[in-house]
Each structure stands twice: as structure tokens, then as C-alpha cells.
Image 1 (cartoon, rainbow, N blue to C red):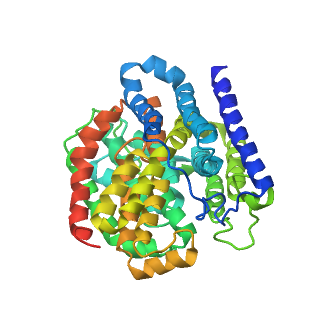
Image 2 (image 1 turned 180 degrees about the vertical axis):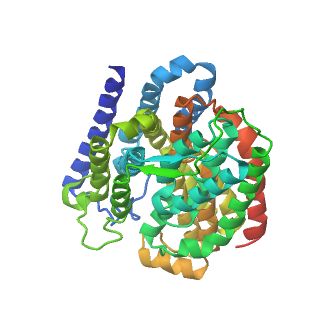
Image 3 (image 1 turned 90 degrees about the vertical axis):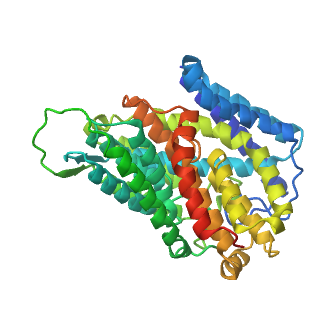
Length: 479
């Protein structure tokens, strides 16, 4: 019953913001642009008080320490904690700053985020992949490389949900935490840097005017050495892991697929990603028509959640040990993260624009990256892209000016794009799939590193040195 109470509270919050949004729309005080409910560039916001970053810091600390020091309380009450901290920020913007527009924008971003993640999660949960091969370091390397490529086609979320279970089963006699960490690094994050479908920041750039194929043309030669270095480090880890002795002697070598009808649902989700007024002229803008903080894209994705689950083969769901707990955890925690990070994002955006003339491509790389690891990487990408365009007096809200910026000097766009995607891997909260993979693995009995252990043992010691190499090769002293 407690779970449904939290769902009800969340629904009340979302509905209240919707009615606030409807009143604004009805009064004619808001003019949205073509990207659903993005902030109109002519609107000037009052900056929040610095102390309002505190709810976000508290939430991050509780996410980091809860499972470690007060596990029972955290597992039982994390939805309540996320919602209460989020409400503190929402109340501040409603009653102190009287800034409802920012809240509506955040609501729209959250609904788009959770629609994509939940639809990919449920649709991929109805697909069963069996890999009857003996696990080895080289087979794992090939598997992770294939996952990195696939993440550009069905997104990092889709690839993660589709491949994590067969990856665990393939390595069941030798599974270690590092197997999952490198999966998060490669499949859930860095792999998806080659197309706008791969990761949300790149898709937002596409909606704003970045050409679709600009990404692969300008990122592939950074993506390739990064993936190669990660796979090389993984291989060194894996060859030192002999695994447990197994009684299974004969492996058929077969790869079996079941539930292939759900590939159709994945295709629908990918197509729906592009059903946006900013991409296809003539697509109904539900915000302009009815004041709704979502579009046809989100309606299609939520419909896929319902239909794909109802039509899924129960045997496949059982074999995948499918349940809604991972997406529930993401939904609750990220509604708190999306709300509480608003002040931090606005303050960072202000400082980035003020200092834009002093920022080099290298600074944009590190600033965008490190903040993407603790904030949502999509709005972080937009804020720093906006600051970079400000160096040339260009406006991110004008599509033609974004296209001009790409032609003018794309080293900044390259730095921001690479950093937003790559650095999403440095924490569990850097990207939505990270938490989902962690949750699935813990429910499979794998002892995952704590929040801080993940950062110190893996991100700092493995990712950051690789990112330093990338910085030195491509962004040092440029721009």
C-alpha cells in the first residue's frame, strides 16, 4: 500500500504543475517554442538563492550513503525522501520566486525522460537473448563492443536493458562487480555517443539544429580510442579472473532470440523520438493546442509501455526475472533529482554565460563533463552549449544560429557533446540506465559497489585517466 501512496503523491505533484501550466497558457502569458515546453529566450528569470542548492546536495548524499549506512530505512522511504526534497524546491519556485515557467519546463523534461526510459525498459524486457557460449575475456570484449554499437541504434537505455541479462547469464560462473561497471561505462554511456538517438543530450542538440550526421562525423575518432582503451583495461581485468569451476562441459555456441515481436515496439519508440514539431513540421504541438507539458511522442511511448507489457510472453518475462522495481526506483529518485537540481543548473548557466569569453574548449570539456556526472547531462549540455554560442553572440533558441555555430567553430560543440555523454558514466546518477542496470544486478544477487566506491575505485582510477588522454589529444589549448 505504501508504494501506491507514493505514486498518488507523485501524481498530485505532476497534476498540480499541469494545472499551473494550464492557467499560464490560458492567460496567454507564455509563448512556447517548437520544442514542447522549452524556456522562451526572452523570459528573464530571477536567480535562486545559493542555499537552495542544499536539497539537491542532501538528496545526492542520501543516495550515496543510504544503501551503505541505513539500508532498511532507505529502501523503505527513498520515494518519500525524493518527493519531500523535490517539494521544497518546487515550493520555493512557486511561492518565493513566482517562477512557474521553470517548473513547467522541468516537468516536460522529466516526462520525456521517464517516457523514453520506461518504454525501452518494458519493451526490451519482453525479449529474451540466450548466449550458450563459454565466457572468456575475448568473448566479453566482443560482447561489450557490439553493445556499444547497438547503443547508437536503440539508445543507451535500450541497449542496456536488452543486453544486461544475457551478459550476466553468460558470465554467471565468473561474474564480478567490474563486469557490470565496464558494462555501464561502455554500453550504458560512452557507446551511445555517435548518434542523436544514442543519448538524450545529443538528441536535444539535434532538436535545436545540430545536423543528425554531424555527431558521427565529428565524434567517431574520439569515440573509437576511448572505447578501445576501456576494452583494453577491461581485458586486463578479465584475464585475471579464472571464475568458478562449472559442471557444464559442452556449449552449443548458439545464440537464441525469443520475443522478437518486441523489436517492433523498439522500432516504434525510435520512430516516436522524431515525432516532434521541431523535427517534423505539421506535427501537432499539444502545448500550443492544450497547454499540455508533453507531446505525441510521450503519448506513444507510454502507450508502448502498456501494450508491450500486456502482450509480452509470460515465460520470457519470468526468464528475464522482469519486474518494475528498477524503473520505479529511477522514476522516484529522478523526480527528486530533476526538481532539486533546478537552482544548481540556473546558477551554473548564469556563471557559464558570464565567463563564456574566458572559457576554452578544454574548460568546456571538463566543466560540462564533471557536472554531467552529478546533474542530468541533458540540461547541462544545453546550458554549456548556450554559453559556448554566447561567445559569438548566437542564440541556442534560434535553429538557424545553431546551424551557423556548427559551421563557424564546432570545437566547442564537440567538447560539450563528448563530455556530456562520456562523463555520464562517472556516477550511478550520471545517466538513467546506470541506476537501472545497478538495480537489475542487485536483484540478481550481484554485490554492486557503493556510490563512493564506484567513483573512487572505478571512475577516478579508470575513467578519469582515459578522459585526461582524450582531453590532451583533442581539446587541450584549443578554442
